[in-house]
Amino acid sequence: METTLSQIAPQAIHLNNSSAPMFSVVAPVFNEEQLLPEFYRRTVAALEPLNEPFEIVLVNDGSRDRSPEIMRELHAQDARVKVINFSRNFGHQLAITAGADYAQGQAVVVIDSDLQDPPEVIPDLIRRWQEGYQVVYGVRTERAGETWFKKATASFFYRLIASITSVDIPVDTGDFRLMDRCVVNALKEVREYNRFMRGLSVWVGFKQTGVPYKRDARKVGETKYPLRKMLRFAFDGITSFSYLPLQLATYTGFLVTALSLLGIIATIILRLIPGVYAFEGQATTLVMVLFLGGVQLIFLGIIGEYLGRIYDEVKHRPLYIVAEALGFEEASGKSRAE
Image (cartoon, rainbow, N blue to C red):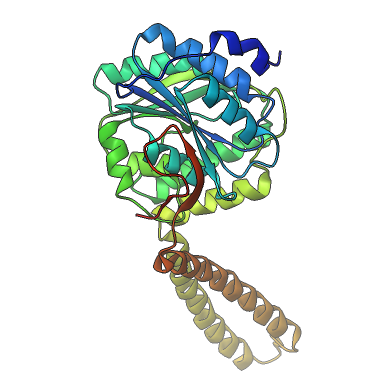
């Protein structure tokens, strides 16, 4: 059932707490006007029993619906809700980055605002953090509402990236995780443009563990990760932590060269045998030329992807531009490029 602002407004008015928050909840927002009030209500309900100061950092990633207006209303009703409005859509991973940059808590929880990752699990993450773990990630035991294709491809991707890189990203995990302040500070030093945050949070190290939970199906709206974006996201993850696609070009070159040498030897032998008319005509030659041309174009495309990422880095543009920041000491309009 959808919760409206009018329903939560009487209970949601709080005075600004001058003490620094112990917990920060960072939630990227993109066209979630129908779910934002319910997300706020459930998050507050999960955190208030902990009796520690907290903040909810909502990062608007260029929403085209009423999400920005609802975020401002939530901030006006509750000073613990802080708002970051991007100047345009910069992407989910950069929205997480901005939220972590601005968050002030000793523990920072990253969670999507679509309520597929239940806020009620946040206290479980916090308990593990209090036991001494510095990164606590959510492990999906069930993924309601997702197709077998998405589950299978996600499982394959995480096993693939674990096998070709030194970064052991846990299987069946997403961006839903808690990070200690020392981890957040370490990530602030990593300012690469094409970001894969769930990989970076593992790459920085520190003591990590998982908390199992059941992921809910999306109740309202549509997924923000269709197949095209999933493929791009997967390629970002692979190219961020592995050179294997580039090395495949070298391996394929040696393989094709070896096969070519064997072909030359076989052709010479067959031509010397009387009565054998193998390898005559242009069909075989044309097929091989087309095949090798296709292989070359594929690897030129892979090299181009890496070169494009290098080009992004050397331009030194800001990772994101903030048009409005509510509830922070930082001035509005500030961009974070460091």
